[in-house]
Image 1 (cartoon, rainbow, N blue to C red):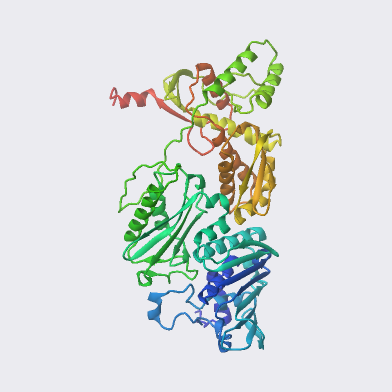
Image 2: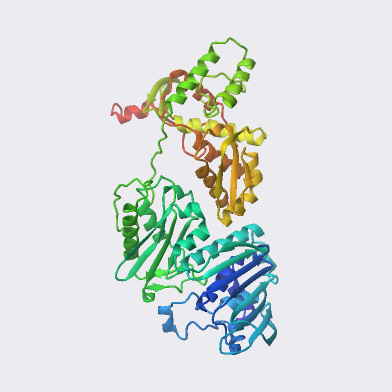
Length: 608
């Protein structure tokens, strides 16, 4: 029989550190929140090597009493609460008393602090949970804490850290969010001796948004606020230009505490539903001020999750205030349409088809060029050369598609589709075909997309992507996290046909794009690609990242709702049949649906 052991403080602190200190960004979050609780007006964060080797947080707050320096590192030592009753009215960022002992258990710590009532400060050094020394020093009012060699005594944890650049981006992200909620505090983040974040601690929250997100986002957001008896909702909402394919640009704060809440996110997205493009997530910075007794922040050691006494009421208020703000905004990019709010079952985005406009002049120009090619009797190789010249020089804006009647050399593959007879087109989107006793319904948009996808992916794999130079290069301002993701994957962008240069600290300049893209919404396309790569957290596979780029690029290039004649349809089906997988588009949706005669006769009640 196994006996029960009482764990010593050092072991229990290391176990607790697994919950509180997940990575360097967790350390920064806990230390900065301590500085905020100390009423600091200036907070400087310095990191090196992604925070793994060095983290320093310096503030000008109230400091720590000299007799409490050692007590600060004792388990559950805190100045924020005194009894269990205080848990129900928490107004500070921290209160559990676990952060400092947990950090000290897995790193080397030097803390210096001085409060106003003393002429000198005190310094303490702790390594792996054991005190090295404590002494009096000369020091300014405030606190400085230096963390070095994080996880040096638990090397297994080091294996789960990402690259220094990625860890730096995570620290930048958490500092950005904390700074958003504390406009009256000046924050400075220094990474490897280079300033990456600077705010100025003014009373104007617009200054903070401009400093953190840059001019582009600042010009496309608007401020709103709404007040009820029990809570206030306010913050910033972005227009359609700022919508993204992920939720990375969404921040929720409750009583200035950064939290993650699925139902609050659902409330905001439901309010946005009628105003944004499908499959996009809105940009928002949402603040909720509520009486502390109406929430429970003691849910998880990281304090990223909270509970509300009445979640349904909070959902309703957030939805109504955000929806009212969007409806009354002067941003012309919103398409106003009243959504139906269902209190009991909040809905998220619903799938609808995105329609692309047809450029008739460009289409007629293409037909003229095609007719010129058809009028010359040449060998296949000669026609192929003329076709290349047309695509790359004369009409660079025309997408290189197989349905344009220009003959091309293809491998002699056996088609995976039967020799179907084309019946016609339905709604300029679906192709109707028949073979024996089967009706085939083909989504021309999805089919065309899959053809382009495999062509482009093949060009990438063979390093034969043809790029076109942009007449006006596109300059994008990125967040610190986004610029790091791009730098880590710049070779992938380069081999995919993009020519991109670093343009300033956090900006890039796009000079060339793949030829077949024509004129896409480049800034939106690039951000979609970047966000997709960023979401691939558990893989470093270059092939998967190429797939993501090819999928999005083809989606941006393909025209939908285009009228096709029989020969164009036959050409498309011929190309589709020779693909490795002609039955699904790059997004996994079906390209072809078939109905047997038996199924149809059952639907018409001709048979049982």
